[in-house]
Length: 123
Image (cartoon, rainbow, N blue to C red; front, side, top):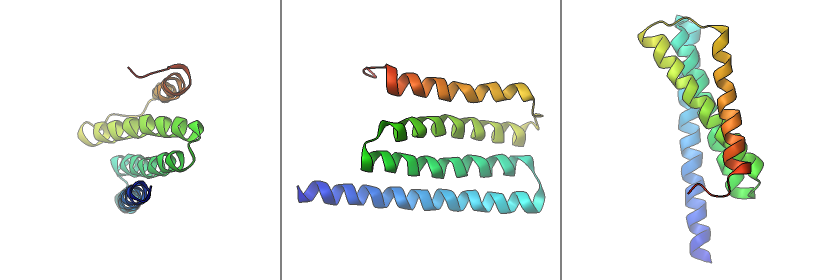
């Protein structure tokens, strides 16, 4: 019993550290965007901020067991991936934003619902 509690606490400490470092990275990117106005800095800051919030969501799920937090975590994971992809595309190729790209944000919502609430097993 005591060993599992210690293990859980150490995992929470690791998640807290990762969350703080990730949010710190997001803050640095926000400052870089404010100074240099590169769109890729904006998207990197959005992506790292989403990643930090994502860590908070999975910690909330692990502490409480509420599947709604797992659902939020899955959505944030998809949106973080899309934001990082877009940051890379704007940095390397300067791809302009189009309104139709907003449709891609629906995929993590739909997939997260199916994965969390509809699938009985990932196997």
